[in-house]
Length: 324
Image (cartoon, rainbow, N blue to C red; front, side, top):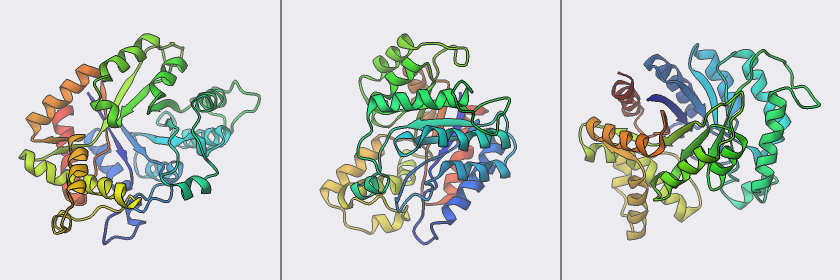
């Protein structure tokens, strides 16, 4: 199984927000050395816990400090952008780093209403999303009335991040799909993937369906230790449901020092249940089962935790576990 990384440039309590970008670049260098296939950056706007709002800029910096790993977005949210501008940004990346650029696109709106207003967006219409991808694809294939510059021999590889009807959109357009979030834990997962493969419309660029799965994976000597590493992310998610603000990662000891309400505890447990966490043998078995259910041959890891040394050990452990 190929192993790739989706790094969301998570901010951490006690560190400047800008340090999260430096951490992302250091992580890109490290996972390239470990043999990871892709380094993807996220797009989140006005989120205190995430520093990356412009993936193309971060990927340009990541390309300058790496030499082989593929660079991509996980993803660019098309409701926020004109497809032509997205095409220009990623065509520039392709010119700078030929044959290494991916463009993952999604349709998630801003996290809060003020953010959605700032982005001049109020809805993520399914038909508009599909039309935007089609337009974007024409620019990248140089079949549109306007040619994106700089013209290059190759073009970025296009992926659809699947939420809701995204799987159907990817199949209809004949594009690779990235599946993550609650759908991975849904009883309908197998049927959803089967429908994608059945309805997939092949093209010269993408002759066969491709499924990538994205999730948090935590490796440790014991299941309890792995769950503790997953706690900062689960805590941030649980607190966001109560405060409306997705905050920076906090140290585990600080989280444990707070008195939790029963509702918070339930939300933390739900978040923890969506991660794959445990010792290597247990994690390997869970990932093998997921690969069997989806037919996926690539794992896009989105793991984050407060302790950067522990995070580096997880990245290295996964490389050892899955890449040998």
